[in-house]
Image (cartoon, rainbow, N blue to C red):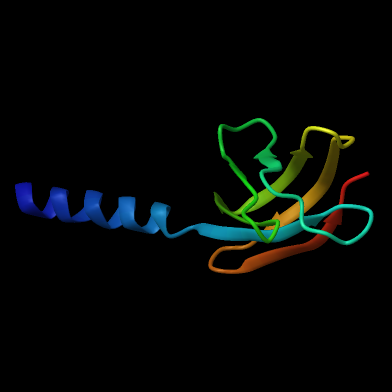
Length: 99
């Protein structure tokens, strides 16, 4: 009985953990150059990252709809609303242009 309960709990945890998707994108300036070290955050969470040398970023989040905030020194901050993330899929936000 004890092992059955542990098995069921392990199964439920693995199912919950697999309900994730990915937000992937890139941030550029008004001339089309990558913005390095721009901060990309999922509003209302502690999930965030910074862009790499190509202006690219990747975030792993639970399935759902999110608002993404992007900021970088010297640029006007912006938000992208209604980013829909589905389980096991990648939501692309390419060439986000900061002014």
